Amino acid sequence: MTFSTSAPPATVPGPSAAPDIRLIVTDMDGTLLDEAGRIPGDLWPLLAELRRRGVVFSPASGRQYATLAHQFGDAGQGMVFIAENGTYVVRDGVELSSDPLDSAVVARVVHTVRRLAADGADVGAVVCGKRSAYVERADEAFLSEVRAYYVRHRVVADATAVDDEVIKVALFDFGAAEHTLAPALAPFAGTHQVVVSGAHWVDVMNRTATKGAALRRLQRALGVTPAQTMVFGDYLNDLEMLDAADWSFAMANAHPEVVRRARYVAPSHRDHGVLRTIERVLGLPGA
Image (cartoon, rainbow, N blue to C red; front, top):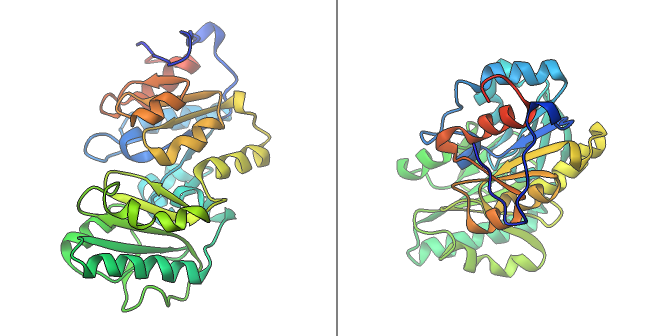
């Protein structure tokens, strides 16, 4: 296995010089999940070994907490879930941190998407609360996209009037999000995070809410340093958390900016690069 880096070539230590990794954080889509969006079967025994070694494993995703908890099932015990792009962090059902949006901002974002839709854009908003996600579009094409990331979701008449703490507004574009949604949401960028989190998704959150900010809070809570942290990502919403770890890996399939920002490049998610890299760096069987 080889790793590339945009900095001068670095050697990834083998088993005899394995670093003291205490926290492993990984994005999900395009990173940990395979091409079919599934968790690789080899992850389950690896999680047991990491737990035995005292290493905290933390999925960090734009997905909601309920979705992540459902995906990992009983194996999620003791994990820290960095959900909703860092706006909601939970361990064993207990909230560790959150960063709710002001209701007036939520309304403005939803109104922006409504106007785009009225002008013919094939877009929709997902208002992400702590208890559920809320959508106004009820067509099956849109809901099938929503289900992939939001196990708990409800169709409502007015997503700006839900009785929940809203931590993020996610916007889906059946076209290219960077071409339609991102420019329309540019006015919010002066005061909030407007992040292209995938080819079809843009997320609006508080400026203080990023995966990286959530990770740094988690490091302080656990007493873990960047040198003891390994991070994997593939898209622009992963940039800040890559900055928080000495062991930062862009996937081989990552966005070019992610590759430039990370210290190393791991094999593609299609080749189960997260698993293979953890095994290699920590000197585990199978490396």
